[in-house]
Length: 231
Image (cartoon, rainbow, N blue to C red; front, side):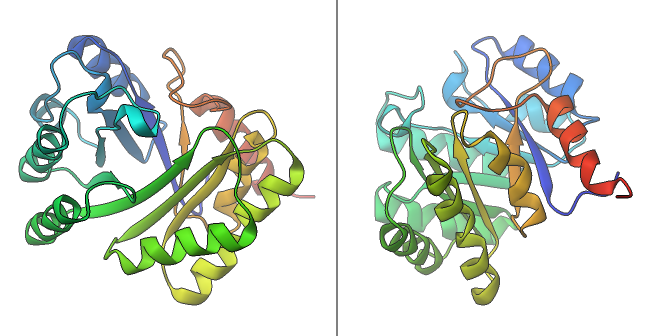
């Protein structure tokens, strides 16, 4: 099946061995695997880089943006820096993170040929079109290789506002992941790829979702197959 963007399967488990097993089991259906370092009891990137032959995205999401990492920002960025040095394909860092620490990570990533996703998440609501545009422009100016804007979709209007960012991204030549969480946002996880989105996210078939409304990778691929069928 031809896919117009990346399908990222998010892996989150406290036990490193279980996380590695989940990642290995999802590798055939994913084009990228996201390893949630914040979910691991002993966060480290090296075992995943050593044992998985698929592009890897490392994320260490802080509690203040819906993740599980409660340590200092210096500790968190050190883990992302380790991932860069180990051979990550991508790392994810929040737009709301410390600007100087983010700048240092961007410089390190560039040195090692690693792409940086600068992300923004809202687990409660979806901002106005003007506010979303401001967030997008801040990500663009940050020096990111890729932007990511994900909000909680309560209505179809929320979903349409977020997906409309793909037109702006296309005009500016800036790769963007943009979709909504929640039941109303489920369709956007599929539609975003057909609208030029860089990547969408799914859960492993036999593991937990990392966000509300996240489809399993098999369900996501089945939905995407509809676009390939003759009508």
